Length: 61
Image (cartoon, rainbow, N blue to C red; front, side, top):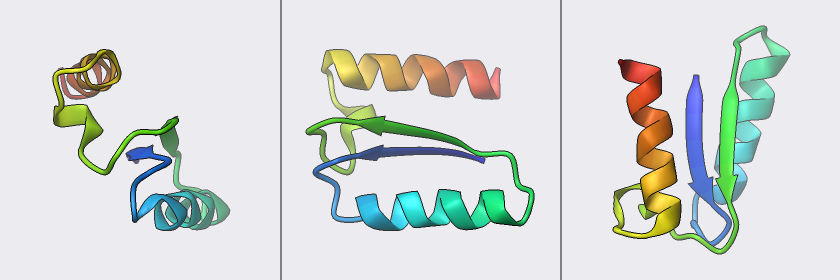
């Protein structure tokens, strides 16, 4: 499971909790947290968004 979350994302605490719970039952998890980013930062034309999209493309390619 790969999770992307920004620390200004309303769902940030839930993303961390999801990662912890998944790991607790043996699910491999990559949690990518980006400081001061909103919920949809991976779609934004910013350096953080470009890095996130590159990681996403590597994961699905």
